[in-house]
Length: 222
Image (cartoon, rainbow, N blue to C red; front, side):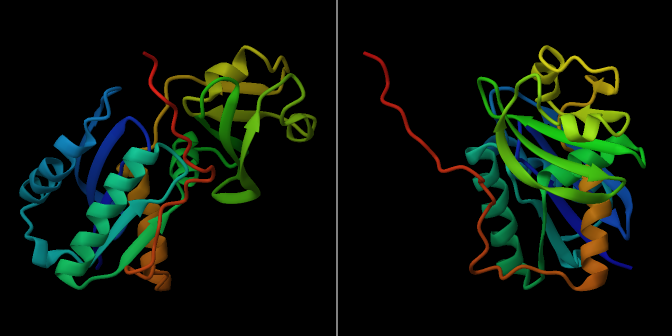
């Protein structure tokens, strides 16, 4: 039985869960557009441990959402995960953020996970069931986006990037799930447990978030 602490901070949803095998036994999360991860993450970790009646010494591994997503959110989550792994001398598990999101669709059909990357750009990955069938890309949405998949049958779009797709992609096979917008440590737990069973761990010293795009700073307006 593996006890895993799961951290999801790639979007505005600051989410922490503790799982026993693939069953979630504690969950703490808040979706804050102000990105209050720095204030909430460690508080949620302590509260989740308390809810599960566990100590840090009971944890077998730390899992973290690896990106793509918010630069700040990813840095906070990965830094916390690596620090805990060092301190507790336990493995680090990294799970792609768009895979976590796709799992919420609960379908064996085609799912496209989308995170808003501002303007008409999204981070996108395509899944069939639990398997990713196309690499993750940062891409500009237009009326022809994902036409290859839509021509084959129904496609479910999920994530906070789905709204901008709904306004542009007019296809009878497109299904837009607008009530599920953000990845959660609840689904992260299942994928983390699968990696734990395979011994699929990261090098704690060298692991970095998957940003997908280079960080670009802008000068503040006077």
